[in-house]
Image (cartoon, rainbow, N blue to C red; front, side):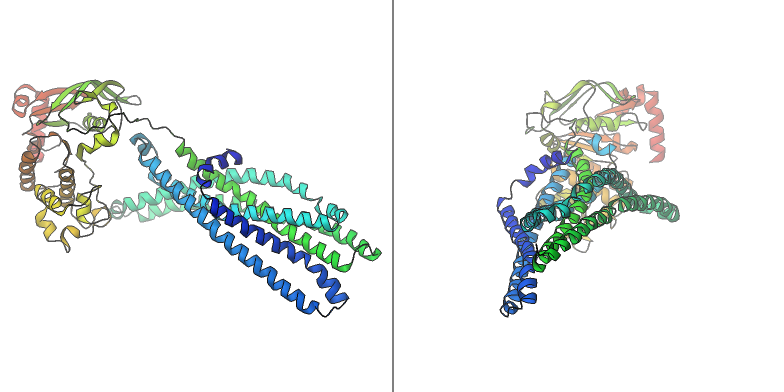
Length: 573
């Protein structure tokens, strides 16, 4: 991606700050004017004050210097305040848009991309963009204006001398181009390695229990040390390359400065220039090379921001494979139909020619060995994926015709992995909705959770720790069940929802849920016989197909596979 293309992508973010950019321009004009004034004041300082020794100049020159630097300070302050505002606000919007894009992407995207990689895009890559937008870009504009103003001034003072001073400038371009190309490649690699580091850290902190249990702290430190060392070496390569810009500029500038002193000295000796004019010219040339050196350094660092921008805009350019339909599902789900549904993951078939009808008030249990297709059915209902063949209908309407949000508002799912957020217990139960304390208490009652909640320091207002570590496994499952009840959806999915509970607790929750869900569709996945034997229909999955279906009693009479599995389930209960 070229710089012009990157700029075009940022234009929608940049264009809304007219007042702020106007103030930045005022700041730049003040700063550039003061910088040029610093060079210009050298002539009267040398000619009038020191050589001619005019007494008035003892008052005028210091006063002008104070005025010049006051003007420069005001300009820099105005510029700094408004450029920082623009940069931080643009980056804030960009970060929000990037997270929004990621959140609304399909589950396939979230499964394929490592969480550390995605976090790195939002934090590290955006931080590099922020540094460029809020710091380097305004400085690039200011220094460029300063170079233009001072070049104009030195040409005005002495065109001949200006030519000899500035003839070296084009020479800078060639090494600069080669350096920036290499820097861009190194920046890409550095940002990718930073994402690897972030992923490694995410894994370490998310799996701290198993690391402790296996005494593998040293092993994990070794893995992190290797990644960190590689990251360090990449950054040093970028430093070796990037830091070449300033010394090269210094050496090339010294040639121009030497030419100025040699030719300018001759003109002073011949009387073509006064000492003051030469001093003003030399000061201006010195001031030209300083911002020119900054511009070169900034241009080399732009490659880092551009590489980060490419990684960010790569996410924005991705298409979502799951498209919203035009219809909002506002009515409760009363019927679900699977018609010859097939789902593949690469070469593996997760579901094959599935045909199934579920009606309001029914409880359907899904059983079978791991990988049989139970979770795939749930994922299709939630539209985490779309079927490769066949179609799914809800209320006699193709599932794809509904908006994803309206569909998921009608589904309450309790998954095998329980998610507890770092918020109050009430907010966890009411997740995503306004907290109604009476409804929270009702949901907790259905989930058989009131007893332990009342023992918490602040009851339902107790703040949960990260991942709910201040709760037991069974307590976390109760909170997850309460969350599903609070949502009051018309389709209830319970995936191993009571696996961490004792038999008595499970029976109490089952009894409460049966009464609560009598007008809903309930789908249960479980490996306990007691959890599924009350279901209206039990579906036995194997290799993506339903090989047996019926009530508990019917399957005991007709299916050898079910009798064998039921025996294992009863033994493990």
